[in-house]
Image 1 (tube, rainbow, N blue to C red):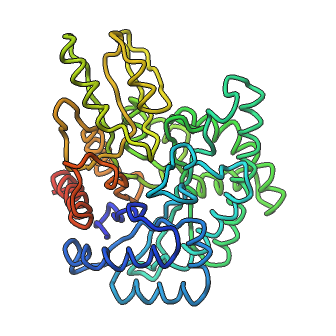
Image 2: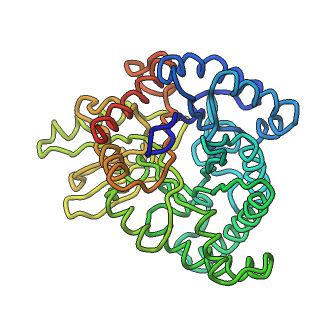
Length: 413
């Protein structure tokens, strides 16, 4: 939905199971009209569309794409962003590190992402002035670092060089699509714990050390641009996906992240509004055991739930998954933050809390000085939450969006 000067708010449909386009479409037909009736009865309702690779191939067929366009128009809905991170199965299967497969070293990831942008270029609506709105596709942080000898500089350089070359193939496609369709679209890279790009500093280092030098050299030759024009195109078409959960797990402060991004002249493509789990460990042994046990209740086998522990001395210790953190827990751990997307509207889980405050801070910064016009609620773990937290899916999505709207209303009046 359109929120005055703040841009567009929707929810990411990776919440719905299904990997074919008929599966995706059926889920949309069941959920979206009712959500629009409840949340945006008098205005268009925004969707953050997630398509698997198989579904994207099916939707790109002209008859399916035209039918979907008609359905969007008939239901006063629109697509303004897409989630291109999960390529294959994302529900009712063990995902774990395979969420990164195929990674940006592969042509399959390139072709999938290009296809998403071709679809988005058709689906993006025009505004009241007749201009197409901007659109983005979020994507993985290039690859998963534990697949490689990450402590070896030569291995890191190889991965960054190969993945960057493939990203630049998509940038060239976006430049061509803008020339052909007048649609400005951007690839939004999503840092994640244990991704090849994990933090804001790593995103900036990759952008300045690999993407810009390699891109300027290639785009000047391919499109006859000056160095300055090529740099501008790269910064226009490759942006940061600010997943609030991911940055909170890494203890990064929103104001610090955004200040650094601005300092280097980079941009945020969209905000994925999501919350992680956190807790500080009390001094007494019984209280510490209770916190550890509470985290253990969220240990489920579908997704990776990386943990970043802050020690008494302030050091950050990173664990690939919750079982490893549980096994390594000792008296030096002062706080844990776990990559488990929990409901936005719940701040306390007994002795655990959510990183809801980080969401509030990001939204405050957005309303003070807008840095993107795309917001997407992204809680996809409803199927694997502890039983007490499982609610009707449509009701849950509504509560998520109403919580965001309520927070924004407080801030903008």
